[in-house]
Structures are given as C-alpha cells and as structure tokens.
Image (cartoon, rainbow, N blue to C red; front, side):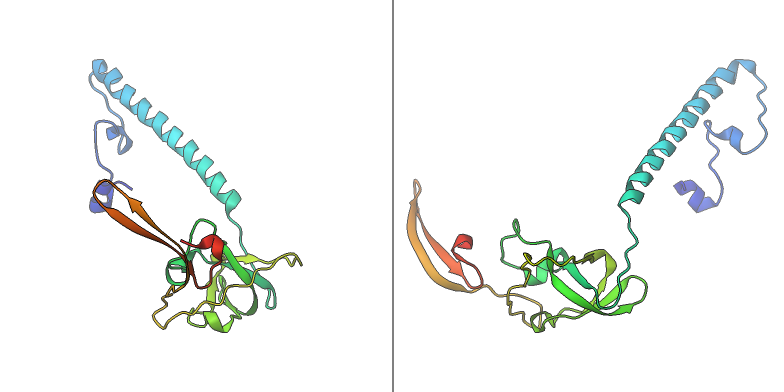
Amino acid sequence: MAAYEALYSRMCRSPICWDEIGERKILDPTVVPWIEEPYEKVKLIRQKIQTTQIHQKSYADNRKKDLEFAVGDQLLFKITLLKASLMAGREKKLQPKFVAPYKILQRVGNVAYNLEQPPNLSQIHNIFHVFILKKYHPNPSHVLQPENIEITEALTYEEKPMKLLDRKVKELRNKQIPLIKVIWRNHGIEKAT
C-alpha cells in the first residue's frame, strides 16, 4: 500500500490513475494520447512486477519445507546462531555448521522441540526452533562429538594459551614487531596462531 493510501485510507488521485476511481470522462480529444500513454505504461509495469513476484514466490516455495520430527528422533542443531557466545576466538572459516546428534525429549508447540543436551551446554536453553534443526541420518563414519568447552555464566568463552611454538621479530623501516606463535587450549598445532 502506498504511504498516501495508508495515511488517508483512499487512493491518491494522480494524473496517471485519475480514471481508476470514477467514471472516465474526457472532454478534450486532443488530451487522450497524453492520458493513455502513461496509463498503458503503468499497466505494463504492474504486469512485470507481478510476474517477478510470481517467480520469486516459486523459488521461495521450493526451498520451504514443513518439518516435523517424532519424539526419540536424533537431530543436529545449527551452531551459527551460538557462535557469538560459544565459539568466540575460534577460527570461523572451517567451523562445522551443525553440532552432534541430540535426542528429542518432547515437542513444544508446532515448531519447537526440547532436546537432550550434554552438561557442557547446560547454559543454553534446551528448546530449539525447527529452522535450526536438521534430521540426523546415522552413519558409523560420522564422529560429531562437540569439544569440551567451559562456558561461564555470562555465556562467554575464554581462550587460554598452552604452549609457545615459535618467536620472531619482524623488522620494518622504523620499528621492530615481536611475533609469537601460540598453541591454544582445545586446539591442535594446525590451528596455532
């Protein structure tokens, strides 16, 4: 709805759509092309916008799925929403999108499920919306156990250094910058920074 229509609860009478509100009466025949041309252009624009909306709706409808799970099913949940609190200070590029399979304890409403969680994730609420859940299809080759992460009451994660691997001094024109390569707790040598 246009802003004018929202404010005044009626259509705006502009030269382009003045004939939509009432009966069409044109007294001067020389003005007809001046009125018809914008009216036809507006009709064409509306048709093109409508076809674009239909295309976009069909794309969105193909991707939309109504998901339902049964009690006892195993689900993965998306951790991208929890990254701010759980994954602070970690390398984001190669992080997994979903965390280990968890069993459904009960269904809460139409789109929420109560999941069984390990004690290290006890600070996070255990009811999840269906859009961050994904059905887990068991495969013996999957090893999806989460790392043991210590989370504070404020849902923050503290990264602690374990060992220094290397020291260097980078020489610039006017100064020297000391560089230290560190292995962090809960990370291997390949993730040393």
